[in-house]
Length: 198
Image 1 (cartoon, rainbow, N blue to C red):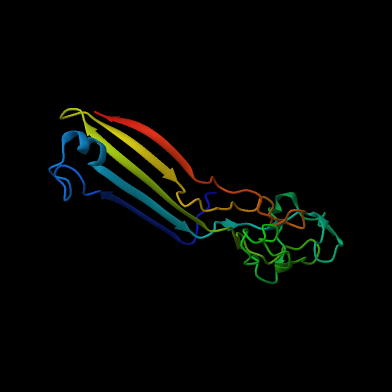
Image 2 (tube, helix red, strand yellow):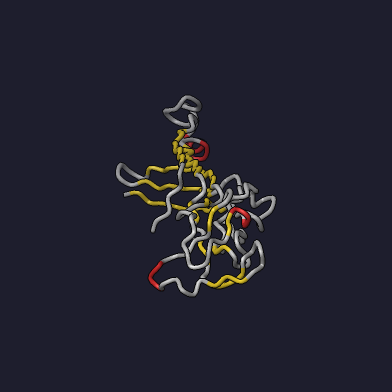
């Protein structure tokens, strides 16, 4: 099932740099100079979203991380679905993975329910790290004739090189590594491209 954040903000824009023929500055510059510094276009995509939902479940057998006692839900039917513990507190610690990536989820926010009974924790009870990124592109277009043009593009994804962490890989309460953030999305990536329009 597709995960959807609670909040999402996207701002995209295109700015024609006002330098070159037919623009505010440099309208009378030579064709050679205009070819280098005129007609540039700057565009951006700013993306911010809240964390994606995280479903916390538990294995039918294992160890209670709070008491250290064994867990044995052997009489739960196979078609019962995911077993979830009781929720007794905030499932998120509120700690940024930049400060402590080992305790993103709160192990003490849950408690073992009576044996062979479903817990009261709802589906997607926690949420993952926030995501923020600014992508920029700088484009220079050369008109080859009335129908054909050539773009030279410089594109920077995650321009500010902000670390965006992925969700914890282990969300099963009681398992080792529960709530540990171990991966992140790509850092800044810069690429050059040429695009022919016809």
